[in-house]
Image (cartoon, rainbow, N blue to C red; front, top):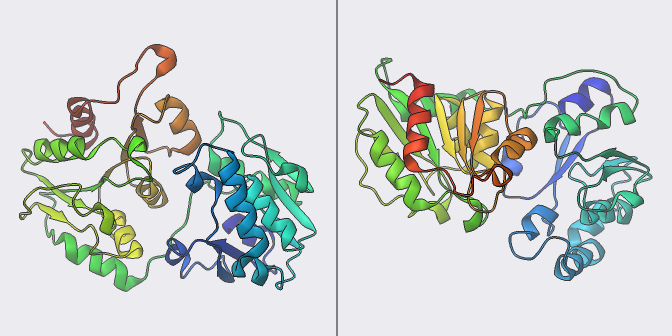
Length: 321
């Protein structure tokens, strides 16, 4: 959005997102309008059905043809539509809305043949950098940093600082985010619990656990002065503010990985059994200050990271003795 607004300052930029994440776009000066599009999108459908299966096709088509949100979209008279992910569902929706200039992604999840122009998907390119490839297709060659932008209010930042309640540099502030889209994607609740127990042996660490209501019981440890479980107690923006004031984030491959990236907070992403290559995942989804640990099937590494491996890396990154 920043690139689009910078390249085309007089344009009206509307972003369609699911209600669960729309709050993160509040106060974003690059966006003129936020609309609800709670469709059965490709990556989320993969949590329930095989990729590009008949069921994903049916659910996507029903949403595009008959949902109230899709009907409302057709009344907006947009001139340009961008399907950033690159899927059949997204491109169908742009076509259903009557948008004449449609841009998509070729080589990911289909739909590109319904677009006027496409960028090429590559497993060896970061998705944020790939998204910026839409700018030349629109006639702009500006260069910006490929990183999400979240605009917190002064109140939100002050509240986060108050939660941490650290007046000296004695404590290092760690966020743990154990939630994820589906179990196979996650490093595991037991692993995260063991990790926290081990880290709390380091007296200079303070740990906050963040997540939604579904994550409340993932970490069944007694809270104390240095361990607080905020799962289900904070909204998305409040959790983002907590991360913005932390010094290190430990997470699955989930939203918290990208919140850390938005605020340039060093992070460790721990992959579950679902992923075959940590190196590939970091290339596609990672950030310069982040580390991704997981399997490397092509190199014969078939096990997810151990708790001890994670602990040693965290100590190294935090310069703990």
